[in-house]
Image (cartoon, rainbow, N blue to C red; front, side):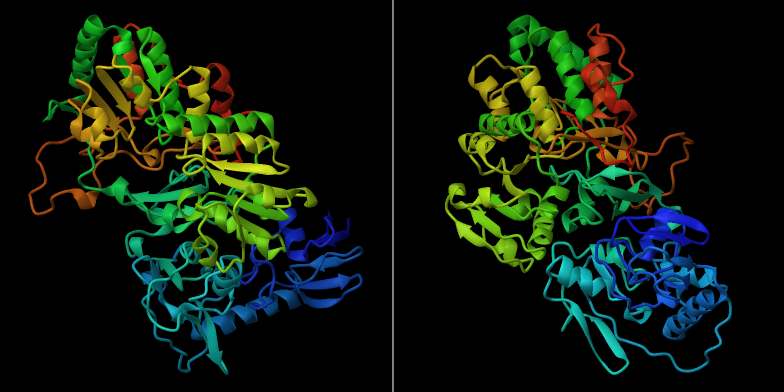
Length: 632
C-alpha cells in the first residue's frame, strides 16, 4: 500500500487510489467538479490542482488523475496550487450567469461554494457572455445550459453509466452543448440522477422548481418504498408537501443513484384527495370515536362468530412496526386469522424467497455490480426493481455476460439501457459453474414457487425480489406466526370481518365479508368499502423500518409533519378564524400507533416501542448507515 504525506499528514491507501481520494480519507477536501466516485476521473475541470513537493512526480498536478505513490509529498495549500484553482474558477465564471438568486441549485451548488471559498467577490471580465438556448427535456428535468461548466458528468453518467442514447454532448470549436438532438422527454429510467450529479444548476428538478431553497427543506434519511430493493433516499419537504427526493449514498445497496420512479412518484403523498379524516359509516368523525366503534363492532362479531371470524391483514408495503403490531393484536384476540398477503400464491412465493436467505448469502446490489456473470430469471426488472437493472449494467460494463432466462424476462429491459444479453429458456443452460462471482436475479411476481425453491441448488448468489418495501419482513413474520393468505382465510368460510392495514384487497374478496375496517393513507378499494376508516401516515411522515429483499433492515426517519399541504388549502376562502395548534388534515398516525391504541382498548398492554423481542436490536439501527441483515 502506497505511503505518502499530504499537508504534513502521513497517509496510507490501497494501490490505485488517487491523490484526491487519499486526501479525502484524512479529511482534506480538494475542490473538484468532473470527478465522481461512481464515474471515475477524466481531468476535465482542472480545479483539483495540488503541488507535489517531493517524490516520483513534482510540480502542479491534477489530484484526481494522479495515483498515490510511495514517497509523495503533497501540498494542497501551496500558493501556486491555490492560484491555479482560483484562476480556473475565474475562467469558469466568465460565461456563467449571475443568476444565483433565481437558481434552484442555490445553497447546494459546488460552483457557488468553490467561488466563495476561492476568495472571488468581483467579476473582472466585462465582455459578452457565451449563451445557449435551453431544451424542453420533459416534465421532470429543467434545462439551463448557460450554467454549464463542461465537467462532462451528465454525459458520462447518462451514456456510460446508465446506457442512455438520447442525450449527450455535441459542439464545435469553443461551443460545447449537453442535450438532445431535439426537444423531448429524456428516455432513460434513471434520467433524474442528472439533477443530483450536476455540480451547478444546469439540470434541476422541474417538479419542485421555485418552491424552496436548500436550507428551507425539511429533510431526513429515508428508504424508497417503490419496490423491495430498499434504496437510500433523502426526501425534501416544505409546508407538509413532499417536494422532491434526493438520492442518498449507500454502497451496499443503491450506491449513489436511484431510479426515476422512486424519485418522482410524490403525487400520492401530496394528493389533496388523499384520505386524511377518520370515518364511521362514511361520516367524518374523530379518531377516538372510530376506535371505540371498532372495539364495539369487533366485539359483537367475535361473540357471534368467534376469533376465527376476524382476519387481520397486513401487507408488504406496511412498515415492519405495523406488521409486528398486527401479530401482537392477533395473539391478544386469541385466534384471529393473521394474514400478511392477500393471495395464496403470493404468500407461497414470498415464503420460498425468504427460505433462500437462511440457506445462503443473498446478493446485494453491490454484489451484482461486481458479479462476473448475471442471469435474470423470468423477471422484468423495470417493474420489479429498476436499480437492480442498473447494477446489472455495471457488471456488464466490466465484462460480465448477461443472460435473460425464461419467457417473462423481456429483451426490452436491457435494450433500454444499451446492454447486450443472451436469451435462454432454462437456467440450467447458463454456465454458472465456470464463473467466480455469478448472480441470479429473480422475482416473486412471475416465478413459480418450485422455481424459486430450486435456486437453493444454483451455483451462484441469489437476489430474489419481493413485492413491496417490507415484503421480506412480512414473509418472515408470516412464517414465524403461521399466517395464511386472506384468500385462504375467506375461502374457509369463517371470516366475517377484516381489519386491513395498508393492504390492497380486491373488491371480490371484500364483498364476501360483513365488516371491513381499514387503516391506510391511500384511497384504495378497501378504504372505499370500509365502514370504519382511520388514516395512517405515509412513510415520510413517520419513523419506521423496512426489510428489503435480501433481509437487510433499514431505518427511516420522519421527514415532515402529517397534514394537508399548503397548496391543498382553499385559498379563495378567508382563513378560518379558529386558532389551532395543529395543521388541518393532521389526523393520520403511524399504523402501529393506531393498532397499539386498539389493542390497549381490548385490554392489552400499552405499547410505546413496537420493536421488541427478536427485533429489539433494530432500535439502535443508524438510519444513515448501510443497514443490517436480520440473519447476521
